[in-house]
Image (cartoon, rainbow, N blue to C red; front, side):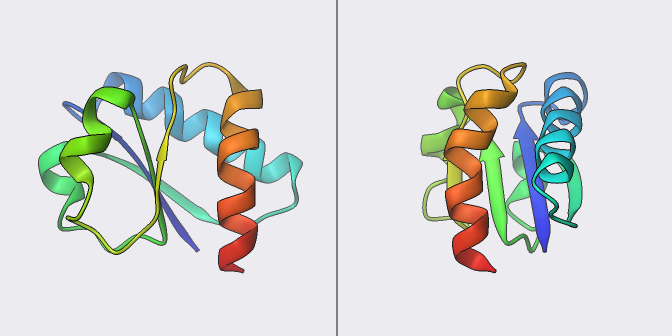
Length: 92
């Protein structure tokens, strides 16, 4: 499974989100490749699921076949788990 974390520039916040997604997946026993990217690059990456911010969610809608998950607080692992795990488990 390929998981993508997206922010505006693909450096700071998407890296934080990527690391927290990896923690949540590990805690749930799921092995996945998690990468991070900027919004422009993200539209060309083939991913199974995409995590992004409220600000970028609408810009990514319809540009990928992957389900989009809007995360309001990239530091909140509970939010990542509550919003992301049902989608990820549904894809398995």
